[in-house]
Amino acid sequence: MKAMRAVKALGPIDARSVRRDSLLRWLVFYPIFMALLTRWGVPPLTVRIASQYQFDLTPYYMLLMSFLVVMMPNLVGIIIGFLLLDQRDDLTLTALQVTPLTLNGYLLYRIAMPMVLSTLMTMAIFPIAGLVKTEFFSLFIISLGAAPLAPIFALFLAAFAANKVQGFALMKASGVVSMPPLIAYFVKSDWQSAFGIVPTYWPIKSFWVIQQGDTNYWIYLLVGLAYQSLLIVVLLRRFNRVMSR
Image (cartoon, rainbow, N blue to C red; front, top):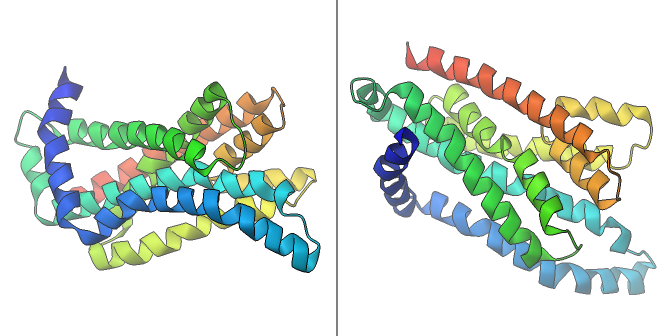
């Protein structure tokens, strides 16, 4: 019941905030744009590269699709992170501490809602992109495994950015965490696990393994969920310290 009250109270406020901000509005539609670009752009590019350079891009379709695994959590997290910055700056978070919706209740909403949105939107854009076939259950599992990245990105912005200008700089820097899995894909030795220091590695690795038909994908999924949960706890503590200053 408390969760539903939080959604009813804060959901419309968040929707209005996103509509008023041109950057956030663009981020909402960006995943659909990228999914359509992948669906309509990559196959012709594959043909062109094959004819000009005799290089087959098809075996790398799984690698290209793997970035959609973390794209939605990243974008949802950035949107929520900017909302947190706005509400911190206008003292909304301070005011919440004297209302029936406590700061902890607010943060629970801020963690749970982006995870739900991320899961649903990841499952929606995968079929649109359509470079590789993924069964519904497999896609659901992978989407759940990547969902905690959304509050991680959100809390990272809110905990380390002093304002929206710094938040924008951190938003661009957060794109760097998508690069290690790209490198890890070409590392076939046990050293590949070293890339697990970056939280985006684990859901992407789970996607690779499950696409290859390996039933041990759940190991990477559970490790990733445990690591992401730890990061959420650390970032929450950092955010609470920032709020108590």
